Image 1 (tube, rainbow, N blue to C red):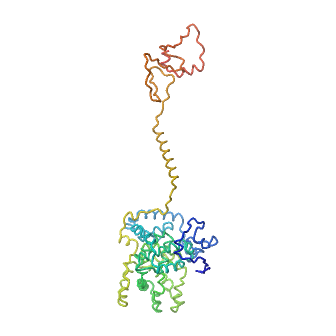
Image 2 (cartoon, one colour):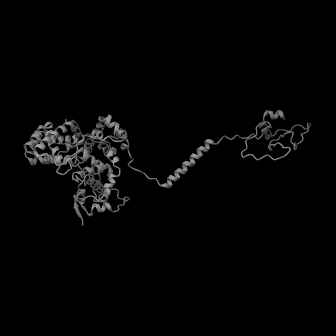
Length: 512
């Protein structure tokens, strides 16, 4: 029976576990999950794969980069990825600057994996994801994950189909994480994080990227009790006092707790809030510089929406303020404007850590010890790399697409190459043959034999060989013809005789 989900009718109600275990024809003529789900060419996708330009995409919100500039950036990023450890240690400021300008789309997934340290983690744990993927998993978490799959970017062509490739990979990644960190299990906010990663990389890479974000960038965010996100809410509120005192006083006056408006912002890394072009730019900087970028984005939005008296006149109470923060004006979220404002916010990683220490002491005083002690937070890619220095082989770039050539083709190619090499060697080694003179003289060296010489016949007298074409013969030959009489007048020379005489040497003339 048809079932309505997210405004669409779906007739496929099978379990994702049933679908993932069933055989799926990868050679189907349907090229994407959007086609499988009934969305054909009449519904256009934007450049990011959203059907109908969803996720607040507009031409004004995206900043187009000229193709020639994009090609130059790709060359620079390829060079950095080939010598990643040297760039991170010696020229990290240049890496940061290029992340702020935006990572080229063709290399974004690879760059994210290197920035987060997921590449190193994957190489040091070869086969771990396949091992976790083959396990059954905890049914308690599997049921919750399965219910959340269709809620993750339902208008993106990768996740629009129930049971499609995108949802299957998302299920695999989230299930693997519950097995990798059973003490944390699964949190709903992890699903959009994993979905964003899957849009840019394969499932195994997305899994290790998720591990790094949960353990290094946002530790404790997805643990039971959500104590880390509450602590960061207090840090955000304290930093707002410096950045926008007017917005701080307004929120304090109406007793609006930070957990009410910043939970989705921080736990989903703004992937559900901003236009997609801005999401990608924020993630480029976030994976390079750490959580301070997330704090800066939150401070920019609060300052823009509540930082002037004219804005505050429209929200006189708690309800109006919350409605205003749920519907942020698009102009404040445009890619160019937002990135500029983020870079101008005077908040550093040291400020975040100092405020974290202050708020942690206050938390312990008012609420006691934290129930879940999360690992220390790493502020950016460089600190992650210095904390766990990678081996050189961990940073080698592996090809993402491997082509298997048919065996008969390779055999034919090998045969052709051998023939060509033989021909070349024959051409090089073959000596230049000398054409023997048909009118050789007795003292001329004999021509080299083409075949192995046969043993000479046993005889007392060996007559010399006389060329048949020569009109003159040697005097010692027994078959020598008598010389013409001297009284006969010489006959006229024929052209043939002239030609033979021209081929003879002067010695022969004197000899005759």
